Image (cartoon, rainbow over all chains, first blue to last red; front, top):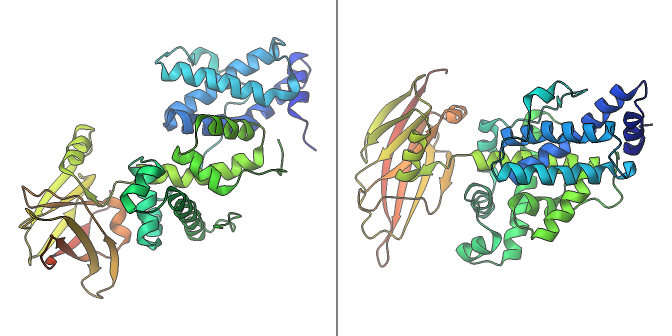
Length: 189
Length: 184
């Protein structure tokens, strides 16, 4: 059974013999979450990777110094640090990731995100019905809100959302089928 | 890290989250849940892979402004002109990142909507169709962005442009374009 996050933080703070392993495990658990946060809020894969490095460095340093007040809520500490660092990155502060500090990471975030084959994606987009495809493209390619799309297509914003989540689930299934990935668990209901 | 989740975030909410369609408080709540939940993080990643890839997709029909932005961004664009009724060959050479098929000779001054349908010349099967594509009414053109990953599609294409104008029957123009792909 995996050690809880709080237990890992306590081992790091105590400088225990297995502290490096605890640091590596904490990085493994949180790197994907920080990356996704960065992708969602910074809208850029490179900046999301920078965010992962900067946040893990800051959190590990805080853990070593015993500055994480509630180790059992290490996830909250990670999120708070992610918010602060992302805000500084958006404000143009380039001092968020000191390259000199990267080698201090016990386990650099080696998480490799899934890549989409564009040809497969194009084929899958072609399998959507016209309305679903338009909603997906207007949402993510044109970056329009559901209310705007609703006006364009003369349907309700609620209908736009339903069409969109069903279309994304259909695209996910189509990509999984093409890649031989295991069956998905999403529903389009 | 939790292997499962007692209260998983619904798929629909995650799609709205990645679409930027949740308000600030809802977004913050999703962020908070994801940081504490490995299972929902994994599902969110599966949504994000699709939505962020769609963000990067260049539409098959583009505006002149977008072509110029791509050129300014360093994309190697090769543009070719095509006339209605003509049957033409086009090479997607290694030194190009993107081909722009400029479909010319279209009477678009009164056009309210333009649709594009692409079929295979040999089989007649539909490859794709698009309603309400961008067009240049003054130049009388539609710009098709032919992308390298389209090599997976049939190479013998018939592009049929349908022009819809008020109080007039639809007009069509056909362009047969045969693609030849060089490996990058």
